[in-house]
Amino acid sequence: MPVQIFASDLDTSAIEKARLGIYAASALQGVSPNRCKKYFTKIDSRYQIIKSVREVCVFSQQNLLNDPPFSRMHLISCQNVLIYLETAPQKKILHTFHYALKPSGYLFLGKSETIGTEENLFEPLDKKIKIFSRKATNSPQLDFTIQKTAGKGSQMERVADTDPEKAMSKLLLSRFVYPSVV
Image (cartoon, helix red, strand yellow):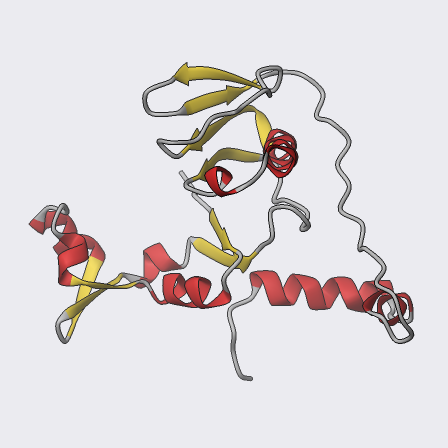
């Protein structure tokens, strides 16, 4: 079965580190020797996940509050993000997750996180491990418009002067293509 994993973070250095897939030996203590041998290559005293696994992962910088989500996802795992936010941003992110999931999709949260007041969007499947199924309700209207900043030469003015097709191509390339030189 083909699998595609989208991994995002706000921090670009975290994305770059994840993209490399290199781990200290101590990070693999809970991994069986057979799995280590099958899925990792030893590089000096560290281990790198094999290329075929890295190739199914698309890494992208993403701000959950401002950037449009990936869509038609089977599973969203959001660990230790919501606990650092106020109620309004949490609600916006949960609405985004509801929109991004397929009708039969699942949301997996961290141990200290909840769906808050959004019981209309998600149904708990296992409260202990914090996995929820997407309810078949309409997703709330989402707003991912670029906010205009004050002053001449603002980002909004620069975006308005750009060819939309060119801007979209740049965005897609920056999000989904590995850094490369041709």
